[in-house]
Length: 71
Image 1 (tube, one colour):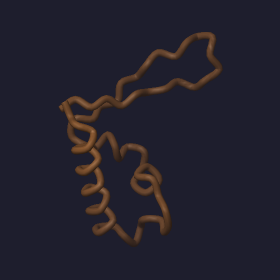
Image 2 (cartoon, rainbow, N blue to C red):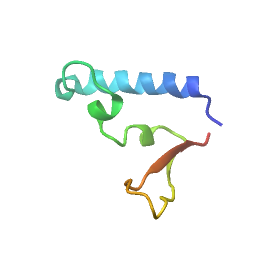
Image 3 (cartoon, rainbow, N blue to C red):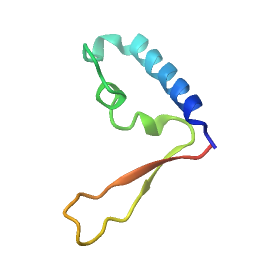
Image 4 (cartoon, one colour):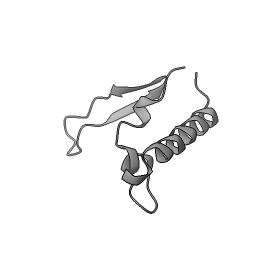
């Protein structure tokens, strides 16, 4: 089990390291992790996996996925 605060801290360190490595390619201004590093950023963290979920057949919503933490 990964604790949310530990995941947040480790993700913040990983984000800071990326900015230091590729600072010239990160958009200027406020960015979410996905807008700065891509939508797969969270999945690169150890213990994070994507799990597809079923979408109700009578729904107009697009298919969704959940991200689960297993550490």
